[in-house]
Image (cartoon, rainbow, N blue to C red; front, top):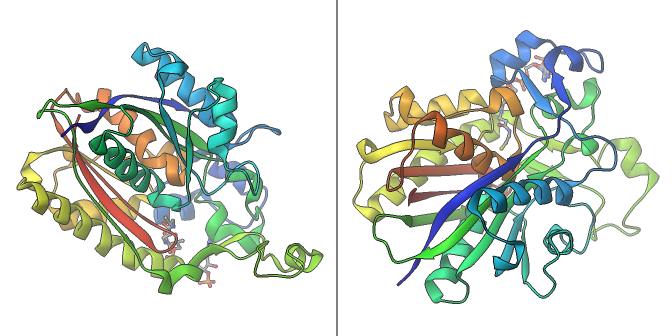
Length: 331
Ligand SMILES: CC(C)(COP(=O)(O)OP(=O)(O)OC[C@H]1O[C@@H](n2cnc3c(N)ncnc32)[C@H](O)[C@@H]1OP(=O)(O)O)[C@@H](O)C(=O)NCCC(=O)NCCS
């Protein structure tokens, strides 16, 4: 049975760097607070008029160029984002149009920080089933246009940044390459602990001035609850995929934990007993880019950690929903 293998990952982050220092101009915060609690030094914000589909397009163009593929080689798009350009249709269709590949199916994945892993699992299943052989899997987010960039929203707005990464996946029969195992979870009892309440179809009318005035249109988070669950669920998920494959932590060349918060990543590393050279983080430069965070870090980890074809990479995520999961693949 074929499995999904990574061909390459293209990335794109906006040029505009927003430092912690800059945020102190908009809210009562400090570089020291942000770095101590999250490890973040700076993040990227888009220019006006640029949405998640455009970031994804630029990342996809780079991926196609790196792989020597034409857009027409892509048989299906899987697009993970919690910040699509519009309520509907999803960004997969906008990316399809930008790439000029009418007719190619586009699946939108709404699993927030776990979106890339949910998408990878679906793409791998399609490839195993023989449905498609070449898939473009994208994680892309524009958070900056939807944050409460004032003292009221500071706990959330200092964390998130904009960016995109596009992975090209192809069917392989090579036992030394490709996705080995995935595991996915959700626990909706915590759905309102990290969410954006409004607008939504549960409200009539769906949009109102009151929503704007009350701040219900901004993401909100029970930070400590998220933290406590993330540091347990991510290591658990990694152990689960190791268990499925008979591999051990010693076999991991590099683990990419979702870049939620550097403190969370450090606790995941400790819980799994991994050395520093076995874990890669880049949240310091980009903040939390949600669905884009894992591929954005994996793309940088490959050259930085000298990941070669066949090396075992582990990926794990935790985020809104709550949703979480892990994947193990040979690069
Ligand atoms: C958000 C997070 C950094 C907050 O850290 P914390 O140690 O839990 O801090 P608390 O929420 O207890 O807040 C401590 C104080 O800092 C304040 N504070 C919150 N955000 C602040 C900011 N950006 N700058 C300065 N002070 C801030 C709070 O108002 C609070 O003040 P008080 O004690 O006067 O009430 C932390 O909970 C966290 O990282 N959680 C995980 C979040 C995450 O990763 N989300 C992404 C999900 S995928």
